[in-house]
Image 1 (cartoon, rainbow, N blue to C red):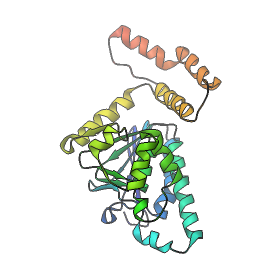
Image 2: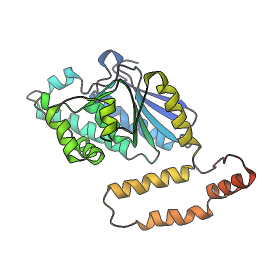
Image 3: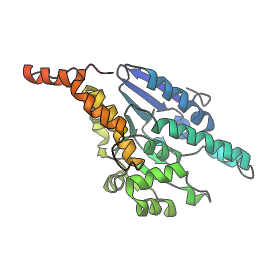
Image 4: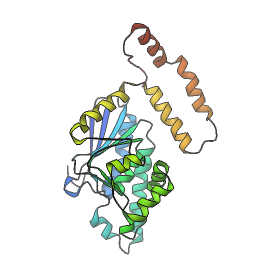
Length: 262
C-alpha cells in the first residue's frame, strides 16, 4: 500500500477492518487519507454481512502520530489550503461518527491529534499497554479540531479535555483508561486475542439491539429531551421481531441464539 492509497479495507466475514497504512510515517494522516474515509465507510455501511467496523493501523508502533508534517508545512501562509484540509478531515470524522453499525478503534502505540480524533469518532476504544494519547496543537501554535475537542470533552469532561489541549502532553494507556478516554487496556501479548473475543461477542449479539442502542445513545448525546418517537417505536417493535422470537426459542432449547436480523 503506497501513500497514494493510505487506507486498507479488509473484509473478514462479519467484520470489516479499516486500516491506516502508512507505516513508514507512523500512519500520519494526509488529505488523501481523509478523502478516502467517506467512500470506504459507505461501502461498509452498505454491506449487509458486516456487523462491526474496526478502525486500526497495520503496525503496532502507532495508530497515528497525527498530521503529516510535510502537508502541515505546506499550509503555512495558505489559509485556503488549510481550510480545505480541515473540511476534508471534518467530513471523514463525521462519516465515521454517522455509521449505524458499531465502530471500534483498536489503538496500539501513538494516537495523537488526527489519530486521536479518529479514535474518538468511534463508539469504543481499546488500547494496548504501549498506547499514548495526546492533543498536541499547543506545541504547534494551532487549534485542535472542533469536532475532536467536542468529542474529547464528551468523553472525559471539559477540564480533562482542557488539560490535554493546554499542555499538549501525552497520556499513558493507563491514564487514558482512568479518565475514560478508552474503555479497556489489554496487555500487548494478549491484545489480539482480547480484541477478537470482544468483537465476536458484539457480532453474536442481536444486531437489532446493537443498532437500536447506538441510535438511542446518539440521540442522548445530541441532547434529546425525551425519547424520540421513532426510537420508542423501535423498542415496541422488538417484541414482535425475529430476534426476540429466536432468543425465546434458544432459551427454551438451552442453546445459543442465532439472531437473524440484519
